[in-house]
Length: 268
Image 1 (cartoon, one colour):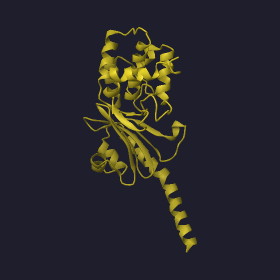
Image 2 (image 1 turned 180 degrees about the vertical axis):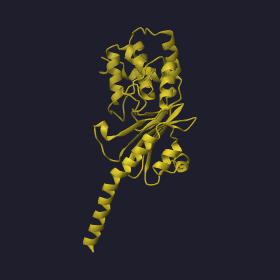
Image 3 (image 1 turned 135 degrees about the horizontal axis):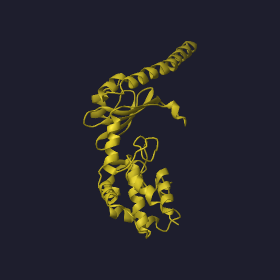
Image 4 (image 1 turned 180 degrees about the horizontal axis):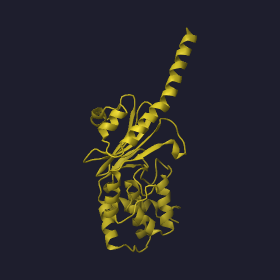
């Protein structure tokens, strides 16, 4: 009986292993064919996800929703079905797919070729609108300027925990007095990077450096500080939290963090 069970399990596993690549190819083809005009409804139908259950019950049958983030004119959806991981940007007004990726679940590889990504034609207008509003040129291959990567905002994750990757980079930019890069971060399409840009410029000013910002850049800085976009956040007591940007970009909050770090190794 054990032998029969083992054989059946082996056959099921092998069948799954062979089915994954063919199913992945079917999804990739569907995304390619839908690059001109694909709705989230069409995408969910393609990958067998119940749209109503996803948005109204925050669940996927046999899968997991990692995050749903509202970036104003579009949303970022990160989730997994039984076999595949997906990242999707969705236009809030039309529910059109702006960008999509798919990869086999559980496969961690530094090779970007292992992840299929599709830029949908409707994404271009969002990039252009952002460029016009913030006076910046967006290179989607630059992770600091693109909305496609997810970063955690914070200056320490857990009690005496490490700084997030981009928090470390922010302090390096402050120490070198790189006002230009920090202002570019404020204009990024990635909200977490924008938050680090605001904090970095605030800390530069607290260090006594005169900020030489153009009138338009000052306006952009103020607009970003007041954004209510929800970002991933960590602190000494919260490892995996979320927060509206304006809560952690107020002068009061930034001043309190400055007091904690002004004499630290990160700013010396």
